[in-house]
Image 1 (cartoon, helix red, strand yellow):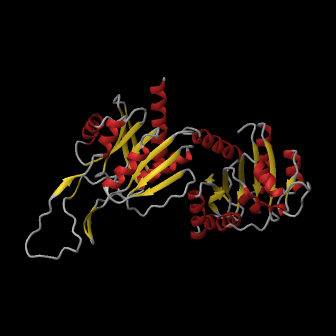
Image 2 (tube, helix red, strand yellow):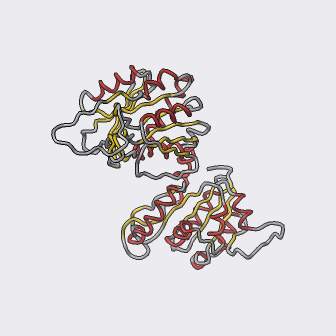
Image 3 (cartoon, one colour):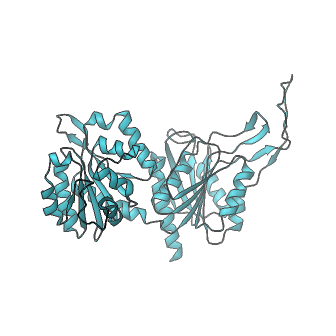
Length: 401
């Protein structure tokens, strides 16, 4: 957090007084800080205060244009290396989600291409309101970064989550994120996710319970760490919209194999998180099969082993597989690691509580080809994805050295 152009947006909440200390600390670290205030923010703190602390003009009105050669909200939006909204009220979060631009701050936010960090501050019941949580979720999907508020005594008299984080914590959170975001910068990451469907007839198919959540979490985390991500997804309900992610939807194992094969040569890291069908019907019926008395036998054939095929082809790619096991979990995972020429494997026991396909949490063991392993305890798939990618990046650096 040094030598950066930081645009600080201050919206109308009592926590605006903390933005004064934040401005001072950011400036003392050697950053160039410019402040944009909403009209309501000026009811709590004078623009003169921020001008004195930042040693820069303060923007409060879209229609005040001090330099006739520039449009102020476009100029400051382009100038910023990062944008920080602190405090961020429910109102400014809603405006940003809806694309409303009716004042200097909201207009500037729509015009900037810089990363935006949002530090909310509001009443605890407002913070947990479905409309606010929906808006924050949407902004996260669009690539905005949130610095969660702390717990404590609020100006309204309530005690709970909603306090603006302290200036030091906000600065540390942004610094940590910037370090994390650069880990995979310049890397091309190819990820498969979800199940495949193997058609029997126009109304039936074979599939499995994979939700795609772990693969999508890996894709999102890789994009947030600076990678260019290609996501090959089977039929799932998951959505993703990070600008660094290109998604291709596929249905069958063969579809997934062809798409993975296409992007494999130009990838630096390949993570096969998809649960691909091992078998498919030999004969696919054009018309719906009618129910008959007695049993039914369908002849099945092997699908292409995508992971083994990529393992045979790999040159400089770092190839990572997943192993969902129910018995002899680590032994079977290591066997897969060796047989398919992988650089690492992520193993989980889908029978354990908190692990498995459809939930939002997982428990995994990471093992690399040197058989060094790391046990990652129960956590959200999103948090595990970040940790796993950090480990993968570390192992790649160790190989390079």
